[in-house]
Amino acid sequence: MRPDTHSLIGAYVLDALTTAERSDFEDHLDHCAACRGELAGLRTAAAALAPPAQQPPAALRMRVLAATTQVAQQRRPPRPYARFAAAAAAVVLTAGAAFGIRAWTDDRPPSAADVFVADDAVTHTLGSAAGPVRVATSADTGYAAIDLRRLEHPSLGQRYQIWWIDTGEPRSVAVGTDLALVPLRDGALAVSVEPAGGSPQPTSDPIVVAPIGG
Amino acid sequence: MLRSVPATTASDHPSALLRAVGRGDRAAFDALYDELAPGVFGLAVRLVRDPGLAEDVTQEAFIDVWRRAPRFDPARGSARTWVLTIAHRRAVDLIRQLESRRLRESQATAEHEEPEDTASQAVRHTDVHRCLSALTPLQREAVELAYYQGLTYAQVAGRLDRPLPTIKTRMRDGLIRLRDCLGGSYAA
Image 1 (tube, one colour):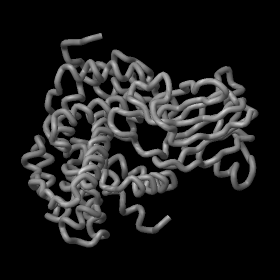
Image 2 (cartoon, one colour):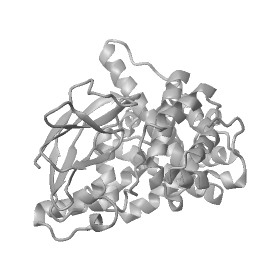
Image 3 (cartoon, each protein chain N blue to C red):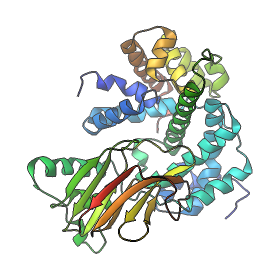
């Protein structure tokens, strides 16, 4: 990490970094407890700059409330957990499976993050026009997972939609979520840009297709 | 579903609401929207300077709030700060998209100079205004150009004709001074 990265924290809080710089800085944050400590206070200061409130049109309220019924929540608290997943995935890649969390042996199904940290997880990073996409497969969990968190935000009114492709028509896996998983079998995970509510079938070419072995 | 009266009771404090939203509580989301949408919309109008686009920003920001609410950690700041942080990033991302589209579409056009913003126009809190005056002129300009106009620090450096390292340092120092000046009144 460049020694001056920390000094970018002001620009980061003001959203004055480019997308690539922002991503680099967030990687830096993962390893810098002092930065995370400083972040909260600077964000509070920046938010105090917000201009006076203004009542939005009443119709917007209905649109927002309707739109969120189509959107799944990100259940996992990502900073401790998903960042851990990223670190664990790196361990798997470089040193083999040294540890893992067998969360799927609990009485709940695994999450996508569980798949990324599974002992036997095999992860790949695929390039796309919108940024890197990570995919993990794990026979132990019986699932394949995909991670879109490094993609740029889609344009306003659009979402990334994740598809499962095998012999038939593409099947929607998730709309507007960063992490998703599917039962492990032969096929491919694909991602396309779709209108905010998602589409029954893809309306654009996939930005990435990740073959999955069963 | 529709509530005509904004939520104002103590139990509907935004941070409590946001924690409930994080557990999937839709009624809490409705109440949180009523509580914080005017602040988000005011910020969006100010940044994107178009009410229609500001509605888009507000909608996208609240969809993000819904998705990410389970991540909200009240120990790291207030719900208002958390929501405004999301909204500011959405607005800035839109400004950048529009800017790159405009650049692509009309490269021959001379650069359009935005009117300079001043904090006195922008900020309702006298505390904030007082604290902004405590910043050095360069700290203040750097913070304001980034926050209110969505410029990158490189663009700010160009606009102010200063080296990049100077600008990034001034942004951080300016925010630190603002934080320390606002002190307890804005903490978490």
